[in-house]
Image (cartoon, rainbow, N blue to C red; front, side, top):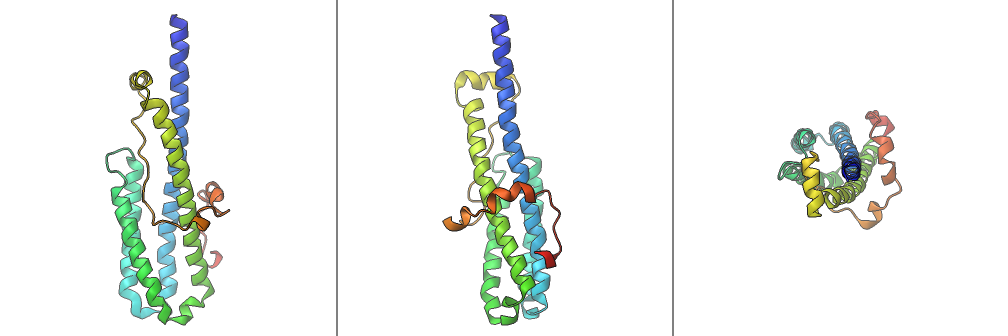
Length: 207
């Protein structure tokens, strides 16, 4: 009886650790993609300044929001299970999205910007990062639901996991990014996120 109980406890602990590791791996990929995105935005703005210096105030606001979003992501990375942990980053993302939407509208008055290859390339790469982030968020949420369902839903196993020191429930990531069109969400680029997060940001000319 004792041997069977010991084996069961080992199995539960091993399963819980595996599920948690999957969650944390996907979360790390999300943070890496966010960091890459926030680093690309100021580079895009530097290119835009060359052709639309009159929009410098808005560009500065966007640079500031990208920096603050990066700080929020770093804070979240240190404690992703605190109540309301994703609220600050969500707010920063929403503000950043609004600022960049306003910038896109203003840039319609600057044909030179819209026709510049480097600006288009960096802008498209930022969109690709958002698609990859969205893809990884959905993957993470699936993994988090599986972890929570196994470790924290059935009462007996929840008590066992608590005794074994298993981490608290993983928080789901909801409404972090503006809703992406369905045709973009299934972009073939999305599954390649894991290959890209380990690459350092390339020079603007390569994006």
